[in-house]
Amino acid sequence: MTHKLTRTGPELTRRGLLQLAGAGAVLLGAAGCGTAGRAETGGATFVYGRSADATSLDPMNQTDSESYAVIHQIFDSLLRYAPDGTLLPALAAAVPAPENDGRQYTFELREDVRFHDGTPLDAEAVVFNFRRWRESDHPYHRGGGPQSSKFAYYKNLFGGFDDKSVISGVEAVGSHAVRFTLREPYGPFLPTLAGAQFGIASPTAIRQDVDGFWERPVGTGPFTLASWEHGSKITLRRNESWWGKRPTGPGRPVDTVVLTPMPDSTARVAALVGGGLDAVNGIVPQDADAIRDTSGFTVVQHPQECFSYFAMNTRRAPFQNPLVRKAIAHAIDLPTIVEHFFGERAEVAGAPLYGISAFVDRSIQPHPHDPDLARKLLAEAGLPDGFRTSLWYMSTARPYLPDGKGVAQVAQANLADVGITAELVTYELATYSERTGKGLHDIAIYGGTTIGVDSYFPLNYWYASASATPESSSNLSFYQNSQVDALLAEARVTTDPEEQRALYANVQRIVHDEVPVLPIAYVSPPVALRSSVAGFGTNIAMDDLDALSR
Image (spheres, one colour):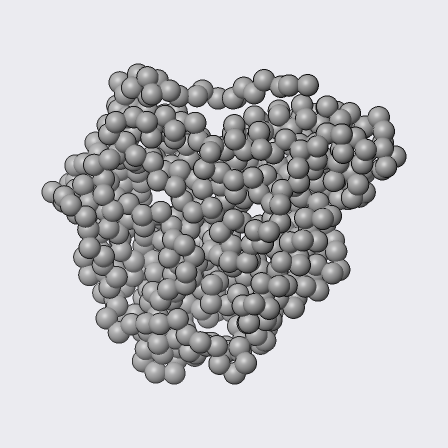
């Protein structure tokens, strides 16, 4: 049977984009933004339309991508990522080598760095930040605002606080040298520190107002926070004394960045073509193609930082049976779904991991679309007539899932072809996350945006038995495999890259063969911007704005 594919939202053409131009100024005015290109200070301004506002600008007390992207502009970490995932020094003068069989690392810090409040970045400042994060009884182990994650990144990435932390000690061994001591070798240690959540904050600012720091952050990054009108805009000013200043392109350097939340994708596009915005993110692939074909605009792509998948709840019948899961994998037409709903720059995923991950196994091929094989597997599982189930999808567009309803509808039709009747279910995003975390779904479409190229964290987060918790599981298939757990435990304490590669490859192959999740796509999210803007850089889970000019 052939199914006609239809998008569940409006699809723009070049003519449609031009027709939106008149509406753009009205929409932008309603959003409360100024005109692109004008700065109150007399310099150039860059106005960026995003899908949502930030929730907290305290680096370790947030977990959402919009906050993360702003934090990247205000803070620096000890290390950073190049767009291709290469590990580079940032506040550290060099990437350190492991010492004491991988149990110690010594970071030499740059000596010319100051926080935005004028206080110096030194070893004691780094020690203060890590002790604040690690020690539950630290006087400043709090803050983050009303949506604080309570230092969740530190807990998840380093195993917990206090004696549970992989980091057993951090000390100044000179005015600009810091030594970390680990309880055991930890393979992901260096790439973990490159994430924006490990942005080093001014101890002076935290001591002055730890509870208000989340909306008045002070870091060392390329921009300072000028103002935050919650729900309306965040205004950043160029930090002229930034240690890492990069040369700007032709035209006037941008000294003011305005980040504007506009939840509706069509409204963002209208504001872009209408002249009120300089760039927008969170657009669907077909609209990105229309913008790309329109004079005066360009589209850039992030790395393959997003990954989407179908999670099959192995706690529920009949998904305990791997034959059933394999049948579903062969029933769903992934190439058609990816081509239609993710765009030509997305790739059908084979390995159950982010496409940009350092140890993703590209030799793993996607499960081929084969309805006859799916029917055969169902018969072997004792279900020759199929069964009834539910298929959950996200109602909110995400970078890893631009059109959840459209994907679900095609998958529903594919499943019907082999005798599986799937009822479509959706909720608003917060409720969807809560209910899937409790395992109330049969099959759920989900995904994520990586915070780096480390492979341990996502594999452990999605597939380890310990991650299948009853109330807020990150392992949405509730998959449990003792061999996978043992391989991940070994990879965690291995610092040799080739040994890591082999261990992570084994994990990916086991998950691929047992199919607790069916990978959908490796996604490179698009950003549309005016051609007059130069120096815009896409990086992992964020944008590099320090070299902007227009």
